[in-house]
Image (cartoon, rainbow, N blue to C red; front, top):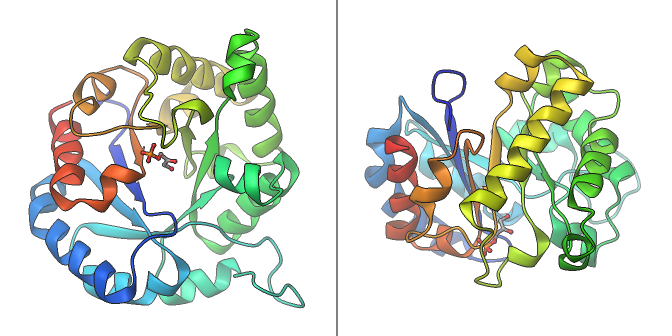
Length: 258
Ligand code: 13P
């Protein structure tokens, strides 16, 4: 990554895992391991809604920040099962994952709703982690760049340059998520560089250079160093490996070095 321009961000996405006591135990284990990263790496755990309060309390006073895994775009009202940005802020949440491919695949999330959620999160003072990525079939058809450019343009539609600097983009090729198949460092760098070039076209170079772009998809203790050494990969969004304190810490330490 380009440390001169951006601070690395390593975020765990716990997905639908961990009860509250389990969440507390995992965060207690992570905290001392990653304490040395405070000045170099932003360390985040994105946890299920039911764990948020426990997670915020457990990490208070440490350098581990807490994120949610989704947010609704309306402020309040008849939206059964949804959680608003203000509710997350009130609990002490700082980040929120938006548009994860599992939300897009299983819960009908579209670029339009990702855009609305992103704007609602920013308006409430949350930092969105907006996920983009191509399907295996789209890569095979050689339209990865078209797919990514479309997602970036739609997901960030009407988001100001000031706000996009607070937004993290996570490049997560859908074929690499939970499959053990990782994009090669060169493949991941190619798309992350393309995302930055797209941001430069939409905004300007200074804005594009300020945006943190993560890679996600089977990032683990063994492959993280090579990925994080790439100039446009500023961190990781980590699923499976974020559920083990030692593995997650290995990735954080690779970002400290990277
Ligand atoms: P895995 O690291 O388990 O492949 O998940 C990646 C992911 O979806 C993070 O958001």
